[in-house]
Picture 1: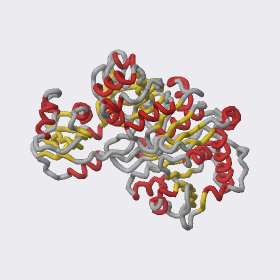
Picture 2: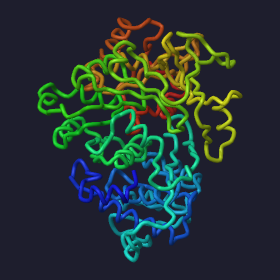
Picture 3: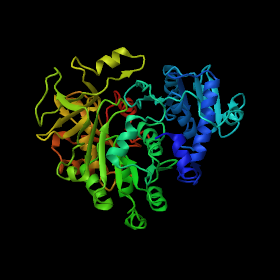
Picture 4: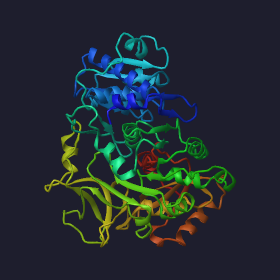
Length: 503
């Protein structure tokens, strides 16, 4: 797992390949470039435990910077460039970054959020900002003397409020020891030197960042998509002989909705493991993907907080459909609002015990709110366990719709509507209702033109498949705001419908 050793052994083997352009960074190049940048960081006074911020799209230039920070003990925070300017600026300030490194294509956002920070830019010229290439030119490509493991410090996606920084403990171990995810990938998912990993998500998110670095730690090759495209995904699997890929359910839906002649055009037989996470996958969607890819799907449920990790492979899922598995890190507890642990089949808040404590950076009240007196922590999800200990998620507590005193879970309705042929995308929210408090409302991005009768058709479609009290009373047609991770920006939807009577 030591990059210097891997570079010596693997040399010209591609570590990173960009999907659209084919631009490649070899192990030898990654070692040399990251060493020069690490030496620059040391020269600028950065020491283990210091923070830097990164503002990049999915581009080759980000990886040497990440590895430089990783090998000299820094916290590094990738900034989600889809956030509002004020939110992105908050992250840079809140993480206490001493340096902002960005790519030229991120101007003018980078200049707007940097405040008074020192800056470095890659990929082109920005007036008044130092070029990273020029800054590292005087430095040796030999490792710094005091290499020690760093860590990414991630922020929540901000779907329901201001992004929260998740401050891990630095491992205080020599560089090359690796992070927990690196070992989990090798032990549980079969990553090794013959791995070709497809990363279709944005690098500022936890899984794309952690799993690309983990692939390299294990000697494999990463194929990075500049942005997700359903057909391009299949093309890259065939072209590069991809063995492992990681997806979110919306990606599966978009691939399944490709015309049959396009899906059958590409050979995806090289794929050994299709990992999915970030949001629960509708049962019918997962069944269709298994029919297509074979029994290769592995689902995990975890958070950037690192407070627990559940896992389920295809054989186990086929006998426990809808489950996100059993814990492989920590143990799962389901509790009611008073903290009493519930039995099998009872829905409550999902807590993890027996794992490391985490903190939200500079937010002790929020940190305390997600821990209990038994040392357990929660991500805010609702769910239940069965008699065998398999966990089934219901929804996030903040997404719950309370209509006439009844709890309604948006995800259950979204799962039904997602596979209707006239639906491109869908989100379900509760809107104000004078009689029931809230009523169920579906926001639908139609696959084609929104026919006048489509709303009634979709409501009837739900009523054929769900209890009537769960079904949308109203439907509107608009784009569904999502992050590239697939998470719905419910905060934005709720703002649109706040105090508005929807008919």
